[in-house]
Length: 250
View 1 (spheres, rainbow, N blue to C red):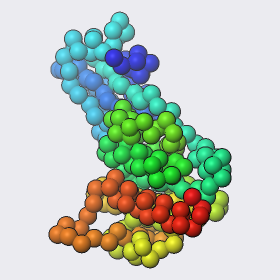
View 2 (tube, rainbow, N blue to C red; view 1 turned 120 degrees about the vertical axis):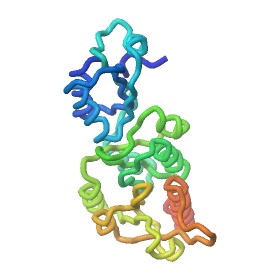
View 3 (cartoon, rainbow, N blue to C red; view 1 turned 30 degrees about the vertical axis):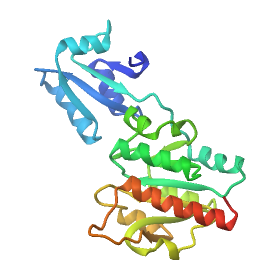
């Protein structure tokens, strides 16, 4: 059963949540409603790639219990985000050079969860995601992470490029994934490092790519020329882990 604290009921409450920092997972709208406020809520949900579902009034009554829903309700995520400073502190506590995975508009929550799981297994100290146009810590992402969110902090930032520039001042080097880059085996991926992975369809955006110090390609030998982003993140993360262990800076 869903925790009542993760349910929002009422038109104004749902719209405010969509326009705020609240992580909205799914919106429910009563069938047959199509007025101005409802259209505004649908527009906001679409803009943020949030699922919305038309349901019968009885279903909304069941979701909201005794609360007045005015034909609209929403599920929100109940998982707390960290700060970028928490990720750096995580590395410092372990006396390790920071290893951070930065995601440039990953849209699929299952991919996000799988990457968080990989981040933990490969020794990354945290994951950074953008606030807009990307998947957040929904229950789907939480399930795919298989418990890794309890150990791997995830920070949400307004501007990925600015965050990269700030982290460079902390001594990090950045490598992004792109088929047109150098083989990952020919790059020095040791020391304080950030791995930048791009959108499932378009990859790392040109602006973010320009901010990176290196561009890494995964060698491939087959009839297709691409990997799922969560798989690609795993391949590159393990190469970083291998090099860090060999260099003694794990």
